[in-house]
Image (cartoon, rainbow, N blue to C red; front, side, top):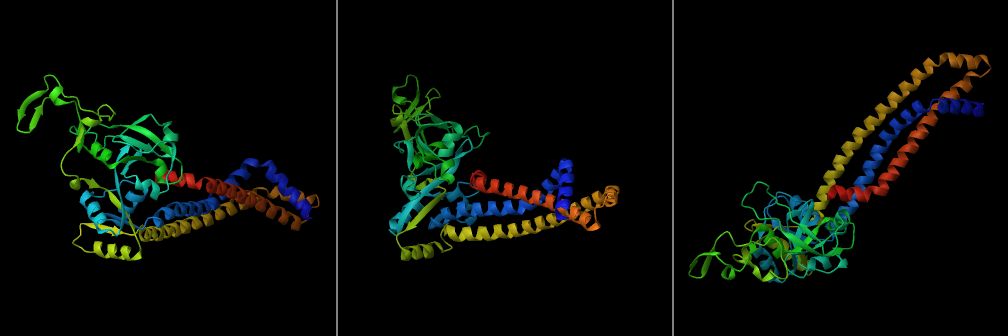
Length: 391
């Protein structure tokens, strides 16, 4: 009887393939959604946690600690005020630990331009896959995904983006020479363009290069004490080359220049405690945070949102199950003549009942199988999708 009921159920399902696939697909979607959500949350946690935990402390402008963490660790441009270069100098003067400056205020198209120092690469365990490390003003090293996405290699060039399109007094985009490509490590570093701090200040307009006024014909308007006033015929450089490198110069005191944040690497637990106490003072214009603590706060919020989303998805699953039950009930009612005919030819009522159960079971099994396939696809691609979302 069981074999006969299974045969009848399978024949009906195979005969009405479109109806079966539609029902199974609807069930698969509502089953797969909470599973995929959990997979993506876990992938996000894995990707973000390692970077936060490996960074002992951060210094930035007072305000949102989360904005500071997103800017310094994940290069997400936030409405974060910059801090003066003098804070880096003061921190190093304490001798309590190493300090790595970061300036994340500009982009090269969609890729963040990260101004830093050579120590950053060893701290993040970044290595050059091809080319060489930064050597002079105007050079840049790009992440693996930037190189792959745009087909760039050492010797090519990349332009900084003009941040304010309608700023008529703004600085021209800087053409930067690519000297190296970093090996991929599956972090936001893969999507960044790295330069030294002076190159960022050059983009900002705190430095510039131009033809030698003294040797340029008809360029001098007037000569004052210790100052030469030139006219508009003097050509400004938007690219640093070996030939014009000496023509670039900076303005004002370097201590007044600005940074986005400072990575702090205390020597030991005592130094970490001393630094924390020092920057807790309300009179201090900057703040010190522990990225791991801010990450835990972010994750607790994320898990609350996840729990809410799962509750909504479970309600959706219940609604989908109820609708599926209604569809089967209507289908069985419309097929009443078919069941009567089967009864007339000798199929028992219990066999007919089993046939109906097997039909429901086959559709449910197909839906669960499709849901597991979708979840596996999400699991295989979760890291890539998360990196795209965090880019």
